[in-house]
Amino acid sequence: MATEPRSLEELQEIAKELREDVVQMLVEAGSGHSAGPLGLADFFAAFFFSQRRHKPNDPEWDGRDRFVLSAGHLAPILYAALSRSGYFPLEELKTLRKLGTRLQGHPHPYSDGGPPGVEFGCASLGQGVGAAVGMAYAARMDQKTHMTYCLGGDGEMNEGSIWEALMFAGKERLFNFCYVIDRNNIQIDGHTEEVMPLEPLRDKLEAFGFYVKDVDGHNIREVIASLEEARAIYEKPMAIILHTIPGKGVDFIEYKPEWHGKPPNKEEAEDALSQIRSLEGRISCVDCE
Amino acid sequence: MPKLNPQLKLSADAFDVSKLEQVPTRNGFGEGVVSLGAQHEDVVVLCADLTDSTRAGYFKEKFPERFVQVGIAEQNMAVLAAGMAKEGKVPFISTYGVFCPGRNWDQVRISIAYNNTNVKIAGAHTGISVGPDGATHQAMEDIALTRVLPGMTVLAPCDAIQTKQATEAAYAIDGPVYLRFAREKTPVFTTEETPFEIGKAQVLTEGTDVTVIGCGPLVHEALLAANILEGELSLEVINLHTIKPFDVESVVASAKKTGAVVTVEEHQVTGGLGGAVAEVLSEHLPTPMQRVGMPDSFGESGEPTELLEKYGMTAADIIEAAKAVAARKN
Image (spheres, each protein chain N blue to C red):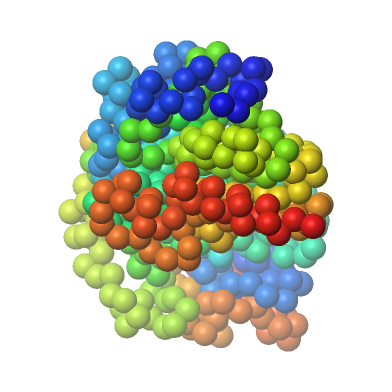
């Protein structure tokens, strides 16, 4: 069952709501990551609200497309998307990182008491990609037709275990696997190309046996088209290099590595929310006209 | 000869090494997964380029479509298996104990234990008896590394038959299991009729003076020690094949009876079986103890018997420890 069709305007509105959720969750929690989740709002709007086949009221529906968030610190945007698509009530978002919550600082799996929709618990970087590859591999053994998507960070690719997983996916020509890399160019200690250069990233992924697409992560149409393409490719696994601007939508967070791992305070949150509320679809319309 | 516990249906020749068949415990793992594979479609076996050594090859031969070669990539093997388990498979991952849970402990912690995935970890070539490969390949820390993880079951069966039973029993548990076995041929003193239950210690011989608690193939050395000391010191030999969940009841009951305990393992004396027994006794029934095992040291190259002698893990060392701890009794 595909998600119901939504217009671009509706998806842009959802992305705006997801950004608001992220800011509100983080200011309430008092800790957490700001830049990455904000930069991914357009991707999550496109994926969860248009392209993904899933049933939020039946989180373990066998035919669902699997989704693993390998970069677990991006949890706020995952929780916002899960909640807004109907996996659990919006109210619960306020409990992020609080004692007794299902919304742990890094995601805990639904199968073990975490929130509905969290397929796999990831935190220590470099593990979710391999787990998602394992899920895709098992699904293919059983001739299941759903896709397994995994979203990881670019800084995360410093971990050698990522490349072990990619080698395996390439060896097995795992066509039901799609690896989305949030290419926002920042990590905790600075810009990725200074901390540990990843370029030429596309060439590396191709050498590992992937079909690779560079995508503007703020262009919802382009994101949907690329995710659909992953479903159509039969020869190889697909990697989407999702070019995003960290903190997108809030001017004082955009492009700033120092905002990778901290939340806004109350004043900053108010400023951020007013900026987000006045976006008026400016983000993904820039080059879709 | 000490009297063997009749309920356990052990080999009548248990004290006579010359009459016992010698089989590596790893063979029991290979046979166990083959038996499971025939019964259960969801069983898959993953291996990191050590198919023959770990005996995962037995499974590969019978069920090639359910065997997964991951290459020399133990981190990926652990997470891949966790993902497969999420999709309903029951993966057994196999390599040397130094690599899993040694090299990939973080993956075991997060993707297997924290996610509570139904993955069975088969650690081959554990203990000093790995021999000539030297310290780098002798897993002496794996019990400590696994038993500290919440939700992990830790098994160290005593011979090849019991390793097969433990492998089959691991399948029946819904959750992560660590299964430890060794490289060398060791005496097979249990039989196909010997019962095996995870979490239930086996009292092999009843004794009154000293309890000797062992795991893995060294349990047989404890039996030999009990035989040699017969008439001088009465040893109660317990095979603690399950280190976690710990059989508190059996261990405390025996310690209460004898008032002195020796632990025996091919593992560092800290953090492993000896550590687990010490934790339990100090809380429930403080009892004089001696630990036979690796004395906070790395091993080296050598023949298995030479190494066991040099680092103090033979029947003679168990005898010495039993006498020493008996002398400390009030």
